[in-house]
Structure formats: C-alpha cells, structure tokens
Image (tube, rainbow, N blue to C red; front, side, top):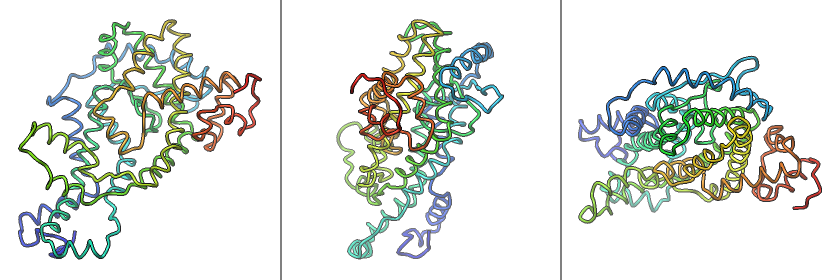
Length: 402
C-alpha cells in the first residue's frame, strides 16, 4: 500500500498507518486469522479437545486392509503408491483443521488472489473517489481489511466442515499430500450413535468411502480435469470493491438481533469479500457441475457395491449419510459461492443416474472409462443422457435404448 494521501487515508495518523502497513503486508489471505477462526469454530469455542483414543485408532487400522482390498478389486484403481498400503491417519477435529488448511492452501491462495484483483475503474468512479474523502477512506479500509476477512471466510468454512466431516472427502476435491487419508473418528462414532448404527459397520463404511474417493481423486486424469475446472472458475471472479462500504453504510443495527446481524455480516462472502459471481462463471458452472456430479455418482456407486459385499445391509448407512450430505449447513454458502461446488440433492441424483445408466448399458468397465483421459468426464448433456457419453467414447452399448 502506497503512502500517497489518495491511497492511504491513514498516512497522517502514524498509529493507524502502521496497522494499515502491517495488514497489507500479509498478502491476500491472513493465514493466522484463518487458523484461529477455524479452530474456534471447530472446537465450538473450547480451548482444546481430547486426543484420539488409542483403542479407536487401533480399531480403524484393523479394518483398513479389508476395506482397501475390496475397493481396489472393485474399482481397479490404486489407493496408494504401487506396492504400498494406504496411509490412514486417525485425527481429532483440530488436527483435521490443521491438515486441511495446509492441503487447500494453494487453492485458497488462488481464490484470495482472484478476489483481491483490482477491477477496472472508470474515470467517473475515479473522480468520485477523489471528490469524496469518506468514500476514498472506506475503499482503502476495505482493501486493508480484505486479507483478514478472507482469512475469516476460509477459517469459518473449514471450521464448519470439521464439525461434521468423517474424513477428508466430504468435498470432492483433490488434496495434498496424495498418500494420506484422514479419519475424524469422533464425528464417525457420534454419527453412528445418533443414527443407532453399529460402530464397526459405520467405521468400515467410512473407510470404504474415503478409500474410494481417494482412489478417484488421486487418479491423474480426474485430478487434472477437476483442478483445471476449479482454477478456471476461481480465476473468473468479478470482485466488488464497494461491497464492504455499502454494507457498513446501510446496516441498521437499531432493529432485530445485532449479534445475528453481525454474524450474517461476517459470514457472507458477497458482503465481506465482494465475491460476485461473474458472467464467465455463470457460463462455466454447468460444465463444472457435470464433472462434480459424475465423480460423486461414480464414488457412490462403487461405495454401495463394496459396502454391500462387506456389510450386507449397508443401505441404511448410505441413506443416512447422503441425507445429511444434502442438508443445508453453515458451510454450504462458502462452498458454493467461493469454490463453485453445488452439492445439492438434484446434483447428487444426476450423478447417481449417470453412473447407473452407464453400468446398465456398458457394465462396470464402461464406467471405468471415466479415468482414461481428462476429456472423458461428461458434458452437461452427456451427464443427463449416458448413451451420448458412451457413443462419444465409442464404448459398445447393450441394446436397451435410451
């Protein structure tokens, strides 16, 4: 940030000027704020949480080889580097937060850079700022506070996810490191208790899901195609630099619950970040939706098949988990508005129908063609008409009609 009076409204106030310099030197995202917010959210304000029970860790480790063998046999995909066993790490919520922030750091940094980009400013807007000292000060304040607000947004999203995630693939996103799979055992066991499910069956189901997701999302072509689509979407944000100023000047704290209004203010990306969806993102969204739905459809289809063979009546677990997945949660706003991932009931059903349609027409081997090339993920039209996808890839179909 320059010390020019036009760019730094606090240049004549040494104390505030030092704060402005410190905040602007943190880059587009303040990671300390993100960590603190995520931890506070994940632990519901508590200062600490218990370590993982060693017995629970041993229980999971005993189930891994069985789940891994069946996932590999069904999918034909690798769950770890050739010749090695998958590295499953049993963690508590705070450890999950730490690993997740580190894993998604490149993605969140890319997002922060996109949202901090300076939009084109017309000569009329420039003249308006120069003629209005208050507007100039508020615009500079917005720019100064943006890294901390980005940290709060990311931290809130990760903290909310930590409260309910079973492992590391509640969001269908590639992660680093590629040889590690996290299991949040307290969330798994609490869910089993809440739904009156056998604890070991629930643990096995989660392992099947996480190993399958890991195999899919570390598959080179899937990873390449999904990462490219997400990067393109994130880069296309059209930030509104006046969002914070407009919200601050129009907030009415005289009515309603002030705390609820402040919570809304601090957790809405469109307010604190000016994260306005652009026309380019509107154009890209259907293709991104189709890719994500197909990936979810494949994973769920494989998990159902493997869990049925290992657990028999596992449909109750699948139904309970998927019902929870499509229920609205505080993290949904961030996931959809910041990352473009729409994990709605309709989207999940589209993915399920695609996977079932492909298997019906071309068997499991036909569905495995998803992993043969980055271009093999379906288009929006192909997602809703599996026969079109099979025809494009020249995969022989059974004569059942569309």
